[in-house]
Image: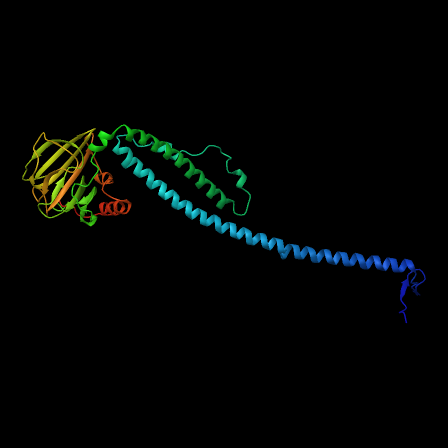
Length: 323
């Protein structure tokens, strides 16, 4: 039996029976439908605001993966930039030095890529800083590679035209000893073994038994053969031409005479302990146009990559010199 409903009539002050005709059911259906739609809209809005959809969850996972990939890319870029810096240093201090070319100007290597608003298109996103940082590193690496490529082109031209110069430049170790731990002291500020204070050490010291052969490091002419009770002791100076000279100090005896022409690898003397020395060793210096340069930069002909790196580490240690 259908339930009878009443509503209060304020005019007659009586409860009157509701007639459930077609209009009534249409109105009731409309109200119910609107209530359902409103309720559904509220639920959908809450779900949209607080609960990600399947597609959104997929995008979140994808963004997380992309962020991780950018971070890995940044790590690899940092490694590539370190390698590039090492290449630049070797280019300036070894290759270009060897061929007598000036180092690439620092402002040219460090100049940026134009465009003040170059990175605006990457702004306004959640990971904008990470993306911009990565793009800047890529731009910097690309620019430095272009500069380095042009520098190597120049070095190649110098190499093709300077075979005689290459034979003259000091490019090997004066003591044939591949065990680089025997390099006792390198170029730089070192503790003086006698004065016990730090002083500039302008060469490298090779410890070796007295009588070990000492070899000329490049073609040239013997400029000086001298014996002294102090300082270098018995020492030899070779003029290689092209602005280069080498000094071999604390020898026990000589194997050349002043004015003699020699070739790279010739035995010019023997390791000793003469002059201002605290133990048997060879003190070796390189000068370019009258100024001292680090001899370690010139040992590349004798060493592979691993040996060269080991030699540079030993050379850089802050140890006592032998003279």
